[in-house]
Length: 137
Figure: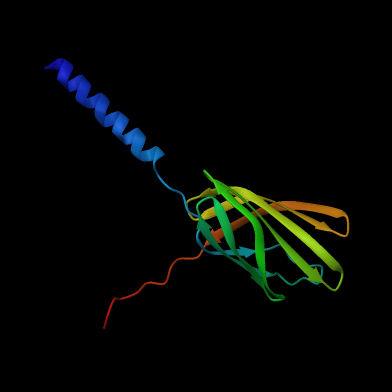
């Protein structure tokens, strides 16, 4: 009897472990980032719309200056990587975003390459809640 109980406890514990490891993280959704203030004091409101297909990540970055696609997006485990290339009045800039997904938050680093100068900063975005639907009326 004692052996059966021990075996049962072991099976349940391993089942819980396998279930936790099988949890699938997915960055698909709309993410809001309140970036640091611009030199003129305005705080940009930036939205990322991400879509995961396998390990490939696609989507857009939207701000007051427009919408641009993200490129080279990859999501493995809980790690995210993508780039955004923008052409502005000062020329081309490439921003590389890296981070880790945990629940409805992505935290990491960004690196901006603008005219050969590299700037880096912390980066944290929050997933927007999906709109609630009351169902058919």
